[in-house]
Image: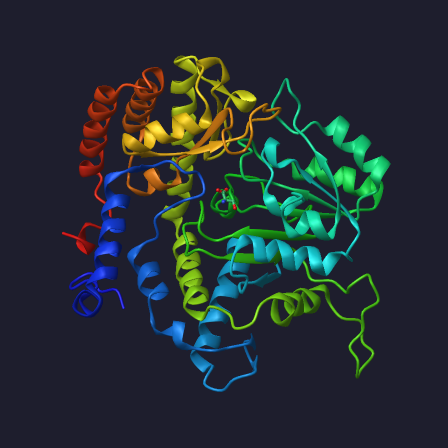
Length: 439
Ligand code: DSN
């Protein structure tokens, strides 16, 4: 268990090789500026629960109906996680067992669809996600995929085209949301299209979940049949996934309970797709850590924090625009900024590498209509959850953009890189992270 008084003593005494690796990672996280939009730093309580003894427990099934004995305390934890998730998102159903966002998406799709059905999702290169129909993912292999895109002019979803595609291809489900879409997800507009073609609507709010929970981003609940998310991005919980529904209703596919002949609720089908459908034993230490994180997110100060994430992203976006960077959609409503580096003459790959040498972690990212491969890309994605968690604000955002610009404008110059690295260290020292774990 992690103790902040004598951290990792057992590991240190028994496996110095792994202890050293862990300490190097603690130090890396502390001494770099983490701008990967999907990453964040959990609190000590979440870290303690995630590193706790519930990792030992097998608990296939759901609270009150497990396949193993001794589940009374993990049941308490999972019930709290579900209750807190429902409160946080103001909804009637939560399944907190998916190991990841991809598992949550797989369970939702496998519940609502048959193999071979048509799905519509945002093109990966336009900000979507692998599980929204990429040919290299289960979603692209099991289903017939029609991808919608953003408009070249606005960088926002092209709803005219999306509607035309939906009318032509009659998808059974439309997925909205993605991993590099800087704007609010337009749930209401997607709902209209879904209704026009008789499709289900699924929202993947993995990225803005913390902003949704605090009311900063619109809620998908009134519009979507099913909602999936991760728990570790803006929501600041442990790495994991979750499935939500506004209201539980009877399934429309005529699935009945074998003994009673009663029509099953969609929640029952979702639950059984997660387990035993695609997962076995739930990660009870992570589910309990999700409960801790949801408890934190229910506190009023989490709203202040979530607003600061967005304020920081907007400060950063404005500073980038002032330095003549092109931003997809011209800015951001959220924690994500997608930068098109084409006219700077730098690839995403080169920018990511140079910035990493300078202690700034970002990821290369395709931009809409990108002519480069996903391994090179013309863009990079930056995000503010992690640096906001460290307590950074407006001054630091402007300073960080200045540092990014110095590196990108002089990408081959090691001296520039070294100078930036030393400024990064100074910033990190002013906003220490997990220092008790390695000092
Ligand atoms: N890998 C996540 C991201 O970076 O957005 C999505 O799964």
